[in-house]
Image: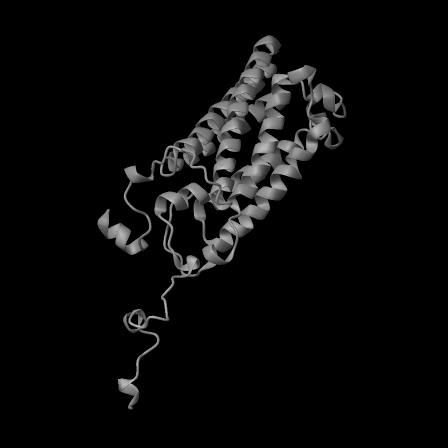
Length: 278
């Protein structure tokens, strides 16, 4: 028999005619929907040139764990739960818990080609690192603001010092609000996280403004309010993290996140095609 007359084993139709053979599809070849992709990776699904999504584990929940632990700890201290005051004992949340996990996530999100989740984790990583510097008394950051030039504690109570931090937090609020706009392409929970963290950032900025003016009672109220907003952010973060881990662990539980992707044009198309369709 010639080679043309032989049954081609690679032809699915020929395979289906043979009773002892079956055609199976590898689970790795199944493409997940854009809605599920955005739920797992918190970024719109776009075409990828490689297969890293199938080869590597989902790093997004790892970054979320670091972010949530740091945020909730910071929030509870700001609210003064149990008489808590000062962040010196938990300064590790600013350098190790949050940033380490977030930076690792940034690297792996970059490898997997997940643009927005990479940007989010990078943003929060540098925030915790930079804000954590303010919590290290050994640096003496307030000393130049004091009359003597050496008393850090006195310098940290001055108008100029607190006004600088207030301006810093205002800028961070605008950055977070920019990210909030893009979270509207993912889901309600993720968007809520950025909405509340943006407001909290501006409220805490107001607390520093009040300290700079010597209005300590109002500053304390704003501090507690900012802490409460961040606590809500932490709760939403835990929920989102649980949703992602439940999906990855194939837990027979479908939790709602308020998918928003169906309100927007599909993103799993080539950039050139999307530009023509716009």
